[in-house]
Length: 109
Length: 113
Image 1 (cartoon, chains in turn yellow, orange):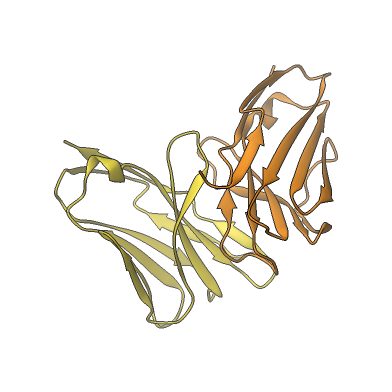
Image 2 (cartoon, chains in turn yellow, blue):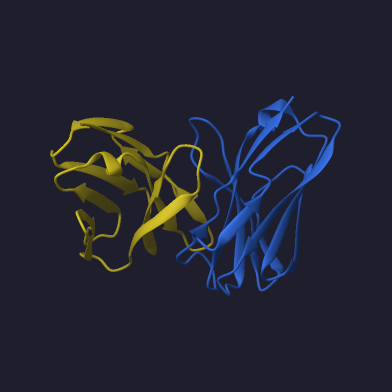
């Protein structure tokens, strides 16, 4: 099975600071998804990456997939309280769909 | 509004009860999924339906029984559950094929007493 490791597990930042969350796979990724979840609620799709070296941005969030397609990072610039939540990476395996354990982000005003 | 609705949002049941969770998607998608999210554990894929056919069953105990009568509706029938089955159950849908961009419902918070 494909395992996804996310780091850090939790993160507390001051409003306005930049931050990065990482997602590492034990196998080559066919597709990598980033989601955000508010506690006890459903997941909100953020971005999908498929090609090695691909980078996508939406508002202040940028996601990258490395050339080997085994590691992805999610970068938030000038964080705001609205960015708080749990960020999960998910991956297409060949016959499977797995998620990382999540990174809990707290943004202090 | 994600286009995927789940009912009920909260459910408390005893171990001898039988209940059902319902999921409905209004997105015209052809694939639907059930996930289990327990505290401090990664999201676990339980069942996948593609064009109403079950294509994945990740070693889920038989006390969980899925039903997909059409591509817009998905049910999870529950019977004789255990306290460790308490979790957030999430439904998702996607356009088709497998595992492309998924849209999630808000989840059902299940507590088994």
